[in-house]
Image 1 (tube, rainbow, N blue to C red):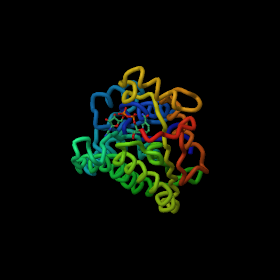
Image 2 (image 1 turned 120 degrees about the vertical axis):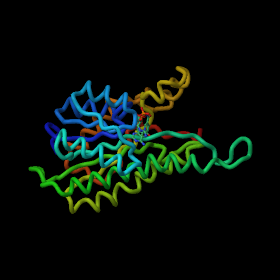
Image 3 (image 1 turned 180 degrees about the vertical axis):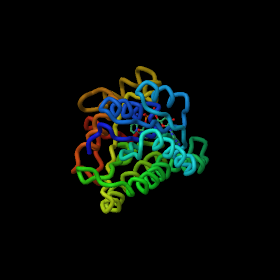
Length: 254
Ligand SMILES: NC(=O)c1ccc[n+]([C@@H]2O[C@H](COP(=O)([O-])OP(=O)(O)OC[C@H]3O[C@@H](n4cnc5c(N)ncnc54)[C@H](O)[C@@H]3O)[C@@H](O)[C@H]2O)c1
């Protein structure tokens, strides 16, 4: 599907990988809606790329529908959904104090990363399915953002890995479901990227993380994620696939 002129939605578009994706889509001529719960940053990014900010919480159906309505009123119906919003967490199942990990933490991470992603996907897909197919035969395309932690999660990453593994697991069945509606679904599983989350770590920690990547031995650039996300849109034969983007990184236990 061509990107130019298309209405696109980017969750988590206010920061990091989502922001880079929003910028790349806009550079390639898409009309971009930045969907994020951080209003201030969403406004800033949207203003800089000539898009619109739609403040929403991806776990809240009412707020997502309001964001989709706002985006459609400004740009027309969206055919591209980049699901990038997500949160991290680190919690051992049995803490150093011997107590079980709080269940709320697991629920919160799975709720945002997995259930929020599914919520966005179902609400977007139902709208997209009603559109006419374009010249390429496609109605739309969507992307999820998993993580290499879906495959080799580290100590303390049960909630994060479970949430990202859930995205990996639903990629193929969702692509199969949506084949009849001419909507493609892919997932990117990034390794370690230089986003605000990692850039806030001490320099020495950043360097040791970078050194764990076989090649290139540096953190991924958000623009590299954005390039792949946009390639998924333009390459009409990519569907139902999970693509690792990690410089051959395989995470150690800790
Ligand atoms: N940075 C990395 O190295 C890395 C590696 C693997 C996977 N990922 C994944 O990539 C995605 C983006 O990560 P990032 O590093 O750019 O993080 P980030 O914190 O810079 O950006 C995440 C954005 O998502 C938004 N968000 C969070 N919860 C939301 C919700 N419920 N509703 C709406 N918006 C919400 C935040 O406000 C923020 O703007 C995440 O899903 C993360 O798990 C990142």
